[in-house]
Amino acid sequence: MNHLEHALRIARHTDTGQLRTRNEDAIASDASIGLAVLADGMGGYNAGDVASQMAVLTITAELISGFNQARQTGKQVDSNTAANLMQSAVNSANNAIYQVANEQEQCAGMGTTLVLSLFVDNQVVIGHIGDSRAYLLRNDQLLQLTNDHSLLQEQIDSGLLTPEQAKQATYKNFVTKALGVDPEADLEINTHTVAIGDLYLLCSDGLTDMVDDYEIETTLIEHYDDLESLANALIRKANQRGGKDNISVILISVVEGFPINRPNWLQSLVKKVMDKG
Image (cartoon, rainbow, N blue to C red; front, side, top):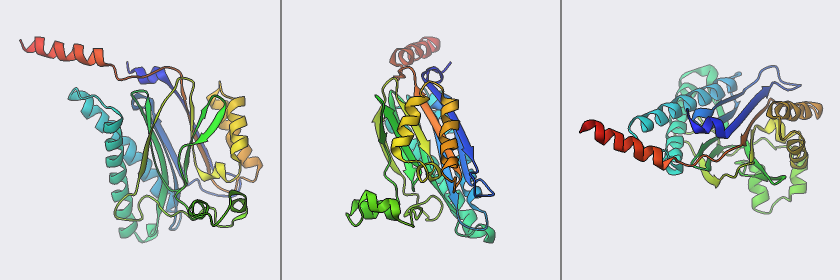
């Protein structure tokens, strides 16, 4: 039994929202490798959901296969290996989406944002492209772990807009990077140390455009012990504010430590050597 499955609790939920007829978000998780992945598709004749589904399915399959291969060869997956596996899986997804977008007329111009996490060795590796976000609630304080790849964020970073002015901007959703629109995937990867009691949130802009950080924080604190009701509460709040876009959330709660288990690794090595003898 994988100790990660004991260490993490995961809940995920996606909703079409109040105004859209289709849900172009896609989400998945796999506790056995500490994976959560969320994609918010865009472009083409309703091809956004094609891009987001391709991203999530390709990345999940590639990562499961990568972790399995590593385990079969007795190799420990540390945070560096996890980051490399993540980059490779995202490259595969990018190639697949880019190819379909260029070959199928009805999918021309499609792409997707992406945010994903891999929990390994008491750390979390987070990758993102676009404006889907990762947050951490620790000691009742909310921290945004990703920086949006968006025109708005660039203007805030360069001092052209204050965060207050940004709230009034009409081009909130103009992303400067997306998966599947360029031959190379420009994935930003960051690794953070995990503490027991941490609560991580991955979400699409359908949540963050409707519900501000302070309200996200208070909702997380209020429903901290029940991830399912927390996921529903976040989506309900976004819908009450107008639900202008699809809304997706993945919540990961850390209930135990999950260090790489050196003794087990040594025991299996000893066993292999003894068996050969």
